[in-house]
Length: 470
Image 1 (cartoon, rainbow, N blue to C red):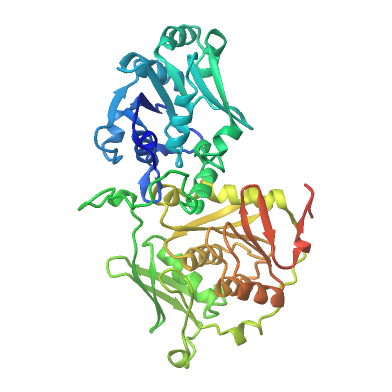
Image 2 (cartoon, one colour; image 1 turned 180 degrees about the vertical axis):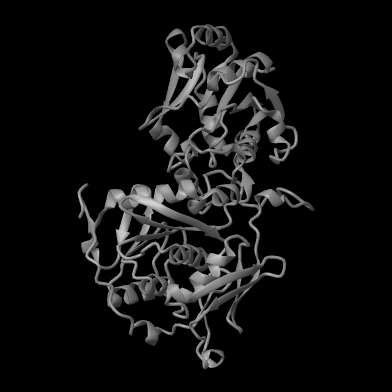
């Protein structure tokens, strides 16, 4: 890389973090992407190109655990909750440079080379702003300090949009084709506004690192743990009557429904009326399920199959047994739009996923509405919790849709087939064996339900293209 590409430009980068995160429901700037808070990622990328970096916020106390890079300043908005324009005005007042780079606080893949391209286009301008297919991008743009009086006049008029001051300024636009040379996918302009956006970003990860980004790993933190954003995990032993059935690694919430769901999925619980009760010893991680249904005498001799699950799932169902299941013949249909909307509903209901990024979510839906959402470090456990809760509450799973953030592997398909759920949808992949089983037992498997698209792998007659379905 040339010296010009590594030398920092005389600009103050202002990370604008004064919003209310209304569409996310929580402070999105502290949500984790690749183990790092969003706002820290933006500040770090800005620091790679700019001499000075400041976060402009209404709540400086919220940034105490944000892990901001050394040297990043925190400025408080002069007037609270005036939107990005108010934050920019604060930055223009405090900067020691001629130029301020305005940055949204929720851009996980900001490419420093894009910033340099804007700098190179500044001659004769007061504003340098990118233009993509979506229009101008004022939250990744350069503003000369001469913009301050114009920003204040717009704010005094009751308006808060950055572009409202553009007609009075010399504005230079940098077109998308110029920027694609540096950032082929224009990932720098990706924002995280909703739970669906967050899920997309986390799944995409850093596989396609921005052009010019360093390849060496960076040490974000040493010697401390932030428990509030780390998913809990512990061993949970499931007992039925007097027999120990299995031990799973699970998130220690909803253990009653986890145990029941596991036993239902394995065919050990079939009669809701026979259930006597469930006792949970949270301290020791033990769950005792009491039922008039007997535990099969040969259970201890049955072969346990270690699955491809996170933390290794356990099942008693062999492939041969699976192919002997009764076919799921439910004739329900849904539209592709409806399925995609249900995935969004699941994402919005997955609070732990938003906080930690380290768990899976699962949901049960019917008639266009998500009925249950459960989360766990294990994707199998999340499914068991949903199916267990439905079984305990007498919620029918026939004609329903089961949704998951995790991969659909063969044992996930088995759980759905045993529960008589006709449609299973994942934001991620479907394994070949799962598809083979689903084809044999009549399940509709849908994968990669994200980015406005989805892939129907088996029994596509249940997924309609139009907006109306029976």
